[in-house]
Amino acid sequence: MRISLLAGMVAGLVLLAGPAQAASRIAQPGLSGAMSGDVAPVKCAIPRIRQGSVASLTSFHRAMAACADRFWAGQFAAAGLAYSSPEVTITAGDDSVCGKITGNGAQYCPERHTIAIRIMKEDLRDPFRMNIAHSVAHEWGHHVQQLIGVLDVQSALYRPASESARALLSHRLEMQAECFAGVFYSATLESIKPGIAWDDWLDAVRRADESDIHGKPRNLALWQDRGYRGGATGFCNTWTATRSKVS
Image 1: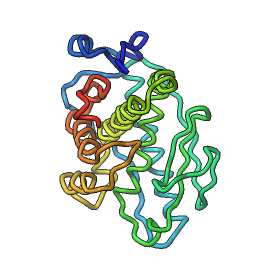
Image 2: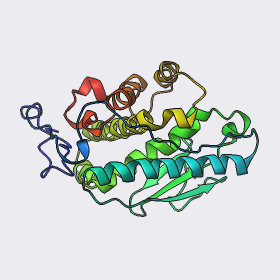
Image 3: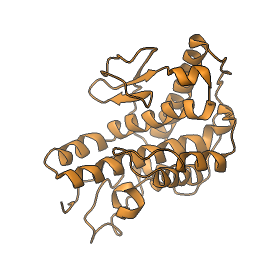
Image 4: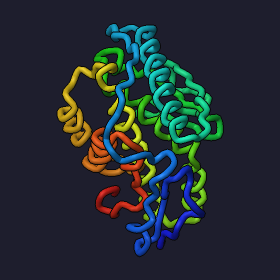
């Protein structure tokens, strides 16, 4: 499918562009912000995780959610945009208001504006702090996409698309959510106390299993790092990136 321009810009972000127009249509105003990389730290109280404790993991997820909510509310306010918080549900089973939660441990259902988090058995056995934190940060990225209109437009393009075009649309969507998570980390990583150096975390992301929906792990790491080092959503325009950067 030849991807055409989306119907306008959503909250100052170019979401998707035709190849010939991509380079000249990147938006600067709105949520994209100044691409300066100067990020004011956001201090959040993120508790330690006790191995084997569902209550402890629940408290960790709640604290991460409060942190993400505060960060993104501030970003939207600075851009003069309306912001609304998602609902957050946490369960130890695989059923949720969003339906079955798959092995990734969390999902976002846009029709309910809800992030559903599943406490995984492996997280109870071996609570890798940064990996658990990322389930919140990534899904909050999808909520941001919902608020600025990305999910609706992506969905409209997805329905009539071919199988290969659908895969590329999914990859662009997921890479942008990774980049938004990186923007969040640029202000909050010190508070999160990830227990791993940033470069080591990126290496772990690169070595993860490839997903049909999310795309190549090396590109997920690339976009997460781009958001982290850039510190602004203007660095997260996956919709005009070359196929090799998002496949």
